[in-house]
Image (cartoon, rainbow, N blue to C red):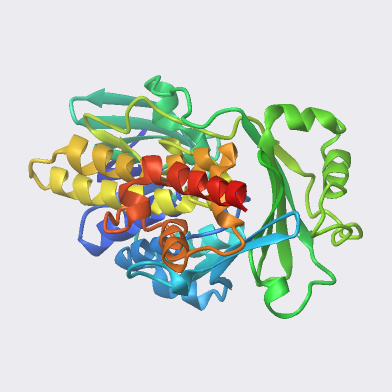
Length: 412
């Protein structure tokens, strides 16, 4: 069995792993990456947030992404029963990026991986982790490449960015009950033959069918579009067991997009993901850190997945660099507590979306400008900015404003 040595082993070549690798390479830390799939490969999580731009830039990936000419995303639109709530990132509270991208992940992830390889980071594709043995902070990871070549990788630290593969979470029995539970999704891509010109064919839109059920439309610059539904598990029992037939039946439930996609062919059989949320008991331990979806995934409603993946990948890389260079690192304060602060904000927003309270704010006919700006900053991913009241007071402010809206309606 062949032996390899590295300071930091990264499991997974998605956005979290590539941001981690980019930061480490930039700072002269030896790292290598193992990836179970062969790229390009399909992945969900196609809508980015402006906060991710800061992370791509710090990891040295931003220029490569810009050169790929993905569809720019300047905000998002929410539609429910004729009411529209539209958010423009340029009108958010505070500083930060005013735009980002919506991307077919197969192409996007390949751009990131190619850029890392160009910069000299070794990535082993089609490499499955079969076992990880820890000895204190050091580890030996056994992998099989192309189902035949066996390697042992000795590392001083592991960043597990394996996403839904959840390599260390599964091996170390770290999986826990999710914070948001009971939701499933189904999605596919189409080659949109009659896409409208201008904003209508460029803007990410969420059509809300009821408080618990919503549909996404993500148009890409290559002419394809991503379509998907999210609801509680019981809702999906109302449709055919055949995913393609079920998706066609669900499309008939739309109002704003009624008939828009009836003649479009699915580029792949719709994929159903039951119980989409994920959680773990802890996101770090002696000699390892979990980042991205390998740690936690809340819900796709606000497209926070890649934002948290890049944030955690970058933060884990910064702390792992200090650790392998012999510095004392407080992983609880600077990683677990830091990530939890942002996750808690988004958790409140996701929970209040499904209670209907947040939807009252989104679809209010005369929203207060400062409130909309503050909510927009959260939707842009700036969930660590405590100068924003909708970040600092996230646990109660949505309920309080929703209560005021209810009072307005009663008085009218």
